[in-house]
Amino acid sequence: MTTVPREAHLPALDEHHRHEVGHELQATLVELVDLSLIGKQLHWNIHGRPFKPLHEHLDELVDSWRALSDTVAERAVALGVAPDGRAGAVDAGSGIDPVDAGALDTDAATRELVARLADVTERIRSRMDRLGELDLASQDVLVEVVRELEKQLWMLRVSLPA
Image (cartoon, rainbow, N blue to C red; front, side):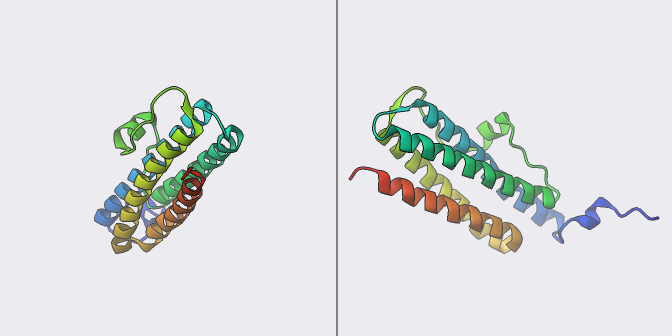
């Protein structure tokens, strides 16, 4: 029996493209993990009306961001790139501004989240475009991410008071 080198099981990307794609996926991963942490922070600290619907919606968003981050990380692993979702990597790699500690009323929390989600979505859209030049399968993963984030952004924006 012959041993097949591990590299033989990787998608047909050269090392340079694999590194570039891995970089774009890692940047997306840390922002999705950071969004999930921000979502939980807001979930725990919101108050006011309508508390319960936003409290529950934040849990749904966090679940979605965690699932999307898993999809992104699994794509990286499929390419032979080790994803890093540790706290230090998220802190160092995320471009998302942190939310303030403490209580926020529901409208302020929604505005804070909308601003951050819009910024993240635009950065991921740029990565998605870049991946179109490098690896269409990885681009497809980010298409899925952008589609979901833009839907979430729409739902949050329409809930804001005029």
